[in-house]
Length: 557
Image (cartoon, rainbow, N blue to C red):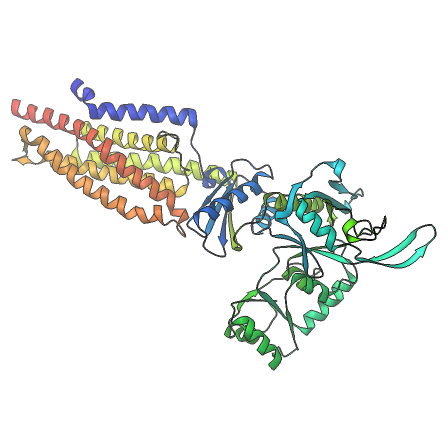
């Protein structure tokens, strides 16, 4: 038996098992949300993105999640149009906020009379210093209502000059008071996030009238001033709009205009209430019809469709009227500006302030977002999954031991089979803990399934070796042919392992749409490689020793 443990194959197996236990003990295992709880977001991009853009997207998504103080966040690209983000968070309200943040491309734009004043890329810094005005005011009541928030930021020199030039004297004096001085009626600036490009608005007159009324009344909570004009909003959004009557039938003039735009591949933004016949007509004209839902009835549908966030009046000071500056060339340049907003409660104000700050700080994604899905598992359920998985693994080893014993009636063969199976599991877990050059992978349900599959495959291969060694004339093994028989068995095993690896390669390389199976593929490939290179050769040494001893006993009789 001593020569068995001195064999280099057995020594290699023992060394790797010890190193794996060392890696598991000191590095720990990285369990996925299936076991430790959390949320997995899958963000579907509008278009396929090259590698450099995917790197930028994953970096921005990571920054957005990190800005919320989340721990154990993991963001990775799956294919060329899917981003996976895993976080250790299960609170429904926080998850909803993060989902809203992740599905936003983040293109920030400020306009006046349809012209761009500045964009998110023009913002040098966002200040979180209360001395600069950052923070929340109001909400001091019991219900915390009436909260307003402010977010100061700094423009670069070019954008500051452009902004100051375009708002110069954009106020009209309407009255004068000896004490209060001149009173001005100032034009409005519109702030957008993800303003639609290459799109048209199509809605019915009933909804248009409803939105017109809602815009006229305004909403302090949603930062819509009273008497805000839909026409002015659409002008600043740069989107042509088409209003249909109650029958939802296009006029000849509308069809002609839409045909020209549809041929260019534009999108048609429509409410869900638009009749199906009108949607089909738009599709026939070449439009990509996009339904924009109205989640909150208190917000005008048009406001949501164009991505509007705020309407802010130009102040006389910013317009260089207080103090008065006569010529544009002498105008004061404003680089420090403040975004203001209102929310129903202080908690909503905190969320909106933080969300807007994160979007401005991280910048916009180079590709738009088509959809986002999420999967949340509670930590308690994840712990239960882990316990059940451990029990299943132990039961699998017990059942395999029993079956092998019933097959060969030789405890000397059963023990090596179980030891090598357990060693294979330990080495796979060691690799998951960073045994190979610090490279780790996450253990989720699919990877555990792959490990269990590796156990079954390992036992199958060891049975092949055992059966080959047990062949002999009249039931007595020929000791001179053990090496040849082991080589024959290993050849079969290598061929089977190669087939398994090749089968799993598409899941490893083309992971888009198969993200949940990637862990299974990794575990299966690792099990096949470890088996062929390490555990199967080591087991053959044990098996050869057992059969030689058995043959010697039979010959001695």
